Length: 139
Length: 199
Length: 144
Picture (tube, rainbow over the protein chains, first blue to last red):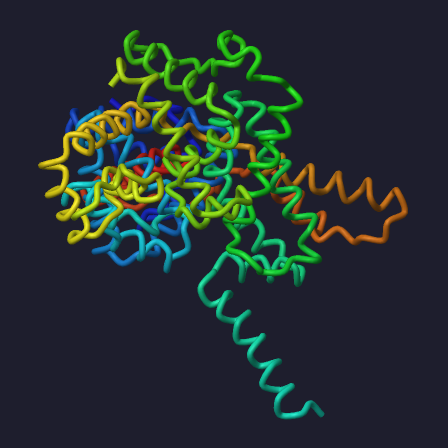
């Protein structure tokens, strides 16, 4: 069951097609989901609720940018994120570090890095694809 | 009106500068900062703060100090925006300032004299799940890096963790590429010996 | 490869580059062939590979979330001090912009409207939006 008062700001911030719904109405929407999916949504909301106001502000801005992407690009980012989560424990930090490095580069430099032998040798094909798909997102 | 040879010379200099700028988006941003665009500086800050802070953290091995020093570095860059000239890659310039800042701090703090007492300067992250062997290995890595002479330390950190090119690191440290390669060779040789049992 | 790279410090950096994966395919192949018959180079490469793995244990950490806010405060203070010291230097950051940086964002409040009928599509859209927010927040925290 979705608890009450589970992060009003999160529900208020969701720019759904049926926008301008009060949070209570969105809670009702989520209760239509099967219990397992309600539970997962609840866990996510609990995590989001812990954010500081500054992190919240940054996230809202990122979400706006994300929403402006074409549907297939959004899907590509989602898929890349899931593949990143599925990486072995010892590989995730390396891929994360490389992503941070790529995010800090200007686009031309990033492309050069993605095409470099160093990059090819350091990561396997799955990891390289994850990094390509996530590179350039979230500035 | 400039004569033909003078116009050629001027055009040549301008082309050279434009050549630098065309290759270097960060230098271009910095010239915009020079023209009064502080949003461009916010972009540069966002782009480089993690790399600079992590480099400084590995140099001085104190997270709080590293962030203060990183702030100093960016403040120094920001203050000099009025006279900025793109004579080098922006990142090279940035890391040159960061290296000098770190080396000055290390000399002032005499950290190397207390290199065996790492408990005071070890990061205290509130990490509940510390695996003992990995923690020991990590501490040995920090200790080994800390024991390197400062210039070797800076060279290794830029080479290994920032993946900077030899030419760039040499420019940051103010030495020839050949001297840098020697420096790195000796540094890695020391690290191989000290960390062999943890590999 | 006729000469052993380890004979000179200058060429020894080739071995470092090779073990770091920075050489192109042809150079790598040449060095690998040499290392097959040169015990010194083989030992160097093995030890260096192990060293890279050990050094990899030292991972990056996030920067404080208020790093940029503190920076702009310091920049503003520095400019104020210079102005008060009589140095003619206009702060480049409008104070309004600085105030904006410091302001805590408030969540948007939607205008109340009559609620539409509840259906599965709306539930799934809400679910997807929460999933996307969660994904972006995790990516955001990875970037710090």
